[in-house]
Length: 371
Image (cartoon, rainbow, N blue to C red; front, side, top):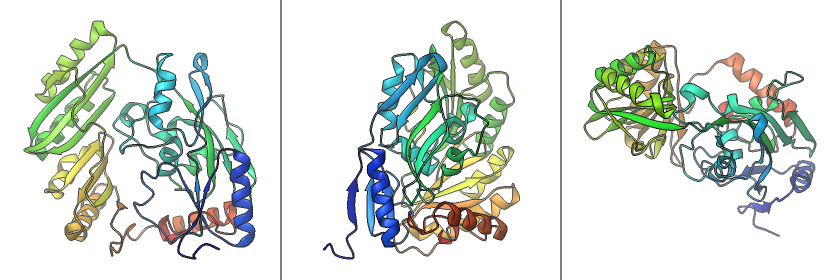
C-alpha cells in the first residue's frame, strides 16, 4: 500500500482509462489531480490529492480539416507539436504559450493566452468543442467540428480556466487561422509609463490593424512592441505607420521575451480599462510587467514585496473597472489570492461544482473559495 503522503500515479493513454480512474476514485471517496506537462500545476496548489492522473499519453492530432480551418487534438499534445502539425497547411492555432511546454489541455484548464488575444481573442474564443470525463466516469461531448455550433451547453468555455475542477478534458476542437504571408514587429524602448500609454493609445486608435500589441518592463523603462501581419506588398507601409506613431523601429525579428510572462516567485493578473494603462503602470513601478492591449497585465515581484504590490494593484484596478488576483505564489504564502470577490458569484461557482463533480473528486481547492 502506498504512503498516504504520496499520491498514486496514473498515466492514461485512452479516454476509457481516464473513465476507469475517475470512476474508481469517485466511488472510493478519493481525490484526483489531472495534469498535463505540469507547466502551471504548482502555481497555486490546493490540498494534496490522493491520486494524480497524467494526460500526456493522450498525445496527437486526431483530425485536421484544413478546408474548414479546424483541428481536433488530444489534450496531452504540446502546443508546439500542434502548431507544427498544422503549419504544413499554412495554418496555425492563433495562441502562444506564455510559459514553456504547455499542452493543449493546460491551455484550456489554465486559460492561458499571449499578446495575440488583441486580434484573435483567448483560448476560450478559439475552442469550438471538447470531450471531457466527469468525476463519475461519464463521457460528455460539447460542440465539435462545426464552428457555428449553437446547440446545447458550451462546456468547452465553462471548462476553460476551471483548472481541472469540473471535469477532465481529453480532446478538443479548435478554430484555426491562416499563417500570415509576412510579419513585422515595431519596437519602442525606453518609454516611461506615460509614453507607453500614449503609444498604446495611438496604435489602438489608428487604421494600422495590428495583430498584437505588448508592453513589458525593460531595463530602462517600458518597451511597447507591435506585431503587424499581412501580405508582403503592404506590410512595410503599415509597419512604417506604426513606427511613426510609437517612435519605434521596425524589425523582422520577434522581440526578446515576446509573449512570455514574468518569472518572479509571485505572479499577479491585473485587469483594467485599456485607456488606464498609464495610471496602472505608474502604480506598479518597480515590478516586472507584461501585458496586451486589452487591459490585462501580468505582474511579477518577489514574496517580500508581494503584499504591498497586491494592495497597490487592487487599488488602481478598482479605479479602472478591474481586478487583481494572484496566479502564482510560493508555498506558505499568506496572500489573499482572490480578494473580497462577489458572494453571488461564489455561490454560483459552488453550485456548478456540486453539479459537475458532486463527490468533489477533482482538483479540490484550486479555485476561488477553495472550490
